[in-house]
Figure (cartoon, rainbow, N blue to C red):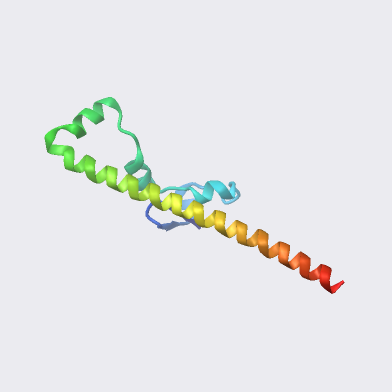
Length: 102
């Protein structure tokens, strides 16, 4: 299973065409098609359409959603780094304990 970093939805590898042997880092930053579409930068023609007065609120919602998704990704990356640091410290402490016991 792989989790979308945008909406936190879990999908099986086969359903989303992700190879289970892919790099772990790639799985940590995987996004479902809905979240990918929400974070895409609009092309010039699309940008003009979305900036028209009728659609400005939709652009604003899209920017907010992109900002939320970016924040979630950033927080998850920070948690991953903190977890790695804790594991490193734990290994060091275990090594020191083994040395004291010897």
